[in-house]
Image 1: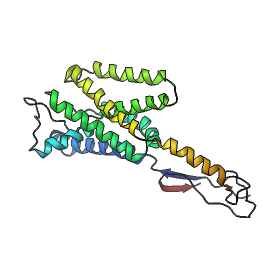
Image 2: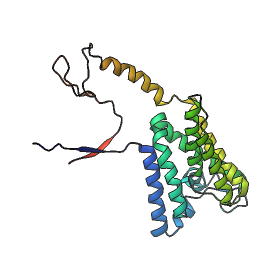
Image 3: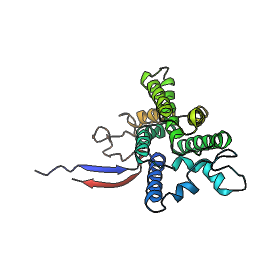
Image 4: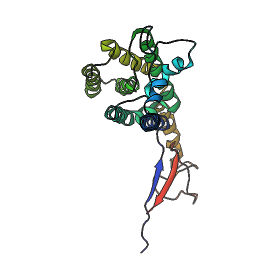
Length: 249
């Protein structure tokens, strides 16, 4: 009796979210063990207001780059891991809903907006992906609102996230907490200007219904494992995942 083979596929299912997390981790390791903190000091801290530690200057390229790059900077490993858990839990689902390009734009907007606010009102530079994390939490809440539901769990996560920021004693005080929440809110509001991929999926489902219709000449047998009345097996695959390898057991 032939042994049945189990084939596993490794997929890079959320390219923007996974790349974002991997870049943060890589920069943290390089800054801590190779550059000894100089990388974050030059690039991964947000600019500050005049009179602050890193005052913003339009003529300084470092200042302009820091407006966005500060979300990649971390000096505390436990805090980095905590934020990456949020990003990797919420990011793939939101990327599946809105698409990789839109999520990438949202991350950029949240980072840029929080960086600009920090450069306008704060004396101490900020770093970390908290604006992006808060943005993902808000997007998850919006997903439930789009279904005419108010998710108690999502509201609880928002409240706990804000409480965590207050209890951590942000170096910029309550202004720093407001900037984090404002950055995340600004990035998430971009979702109102886009059409989630879930809506597009409904059209694809209608097309697939016809495709799987036994009376249709395009009858698909992939989901049932049966042979069509034309004696052909369909090889159609509607998956958008990127397959990067496979294992046969």
